[in-house]
Length: 326
Ligand SMILES: Cc1ncc(C[n+]2csc(CCOP(=O)(O)OP(=O)(O)O)c2C)c(N)n1
Image 1 (cartoon, rainbow, N blue to C red):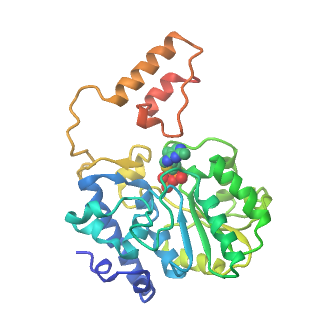
Image 2: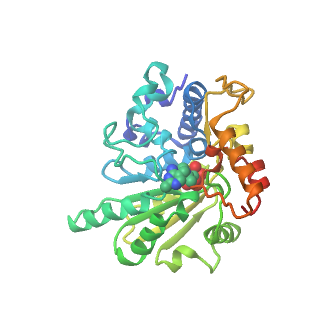
Image 3: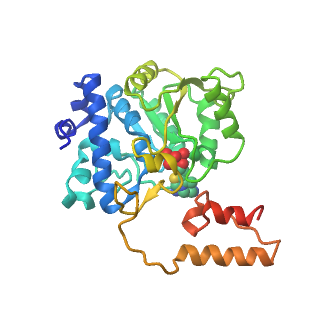
């Protein structure tokens, strides 16, 4: 099992691999994701979709000298496997040793304990500023999903970094066209225009904020990603690298129903069904959703607001439709 991953104890080990071996490493990492996720659950779609990007990042850049900041860090499993923590995925007795988020206590390759969205660019601006004051030269890389890009803290940081930093600063926008649920707002219209124009549209949110900009349509192809990341390595100004990826890549159920598979309970790989018996009765989610729906139907002035994670309070797409504009 995991023939290539078994040989990887640190990023240095993947720098020696040829492209076909890197592609096989992606296969091993997905198998390791299945091993952990089917047994103890966790973030599914975000990790299946970012395997190639994290391999290519570690191939091109030199962590921990170069600094990666993962937004939310719910998509950092491949990074963790490459940075000496594969046993948390392939050895069932070691699952509890890995937190599932970046954690500086676990590794020198993890810089922050996070879990909130939209923090990575902001945190990375601090690292870049500190680097510049210390007259150092390493690459600072924020890795952020499209969904997290519309959080206020991300916007603050984009506002600052693109025009105030005059040094190396790399924002990888991992665009899989989904937040936990669907995206909303103007930024997503621009991301769509950029995808459809292969990055060439004149209307470019990132350029308007002072960033240089590159588009990589093949965000699940290691070779393409390596070539693109090499273009921005050691760059001397802020750049956004917009990569287009497929959330859930490699697991058909997760590719198809992206919202349901953002996070998963333990499941059976063949059927996609949860293996935990929740019982047939009510859950906190169903009680909350039904309560809100009933209230909303009686009171047209009642509005429901979620922090972009509607399903966790039972607001499935069907319930959202029933709530309509409320
Ligand atoms: C402040 C805050 N609001 C909401 C959430 C819930 N949340 C977790 S990840 C996420 C967005 C996921 O979308 P994206 O950033 O595109 O990453 P993906 O999972 O698609 O890779 C949200 C809204 C959170 N963790 N923190």
